[in-house]
Image (cartoon, rainbow, N blue to C red; front, side, top):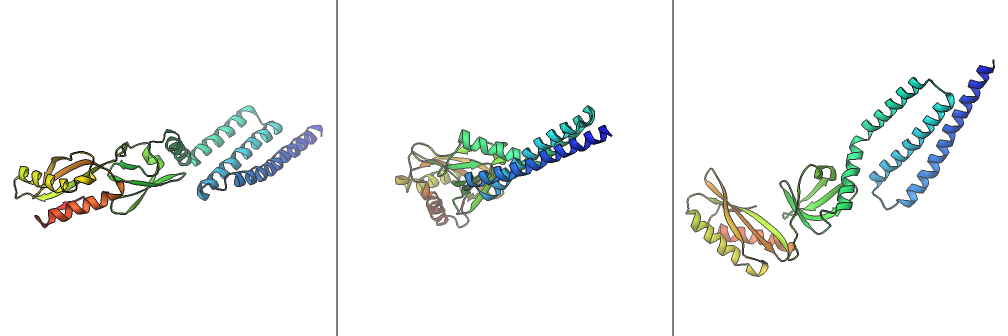
Length: 245
């Protein structure tokens, strides 16, 4: 009889612990919402969920210790809970780690021009989970921070301007050296926008075209689109199928 009463009392105590955890969760979530009201809603929701689970997880451990389950059973239960939490929040933890990398090490900031694999553009926004860049064509690309952990980031912004790279596709039926000279003359026609002399080299050949690579530093990042369009317009006067990208 005493053992049954003791078990009932332990169950009541465990229930009170869980109820106390419920009150704590409501109180702490309220404070967190007020403190982080400026944070992106989706990211805030994840923070609140993690906070809630941590409190309930601690309460569950305390409740189990009060009920005094066997050590082996308790160990297995805790192992399952920890494994479950890791699986549930693996992507979130990776994103938070990536956000820490971007915010602490600051490989770039808003206004910088960066290149990530085949995507290049100006950083226009950095939020909790992703960075938005605007390409020279005006397209906006959203890049998850976790993607940056596995790919090198090239910051093209320098003290004197930004590094601009263009590929130029020209028909193959012309002397490559003569084409290179013409491209240089076209680029030099906007010398006032450039910091240094452009570097022009043959990148590769494909089918009936030669691909040239042009690299230079420009003064005003906002004019990168204008410069590309100007070069393409001038080259099309000579070759209808010329393309700058």
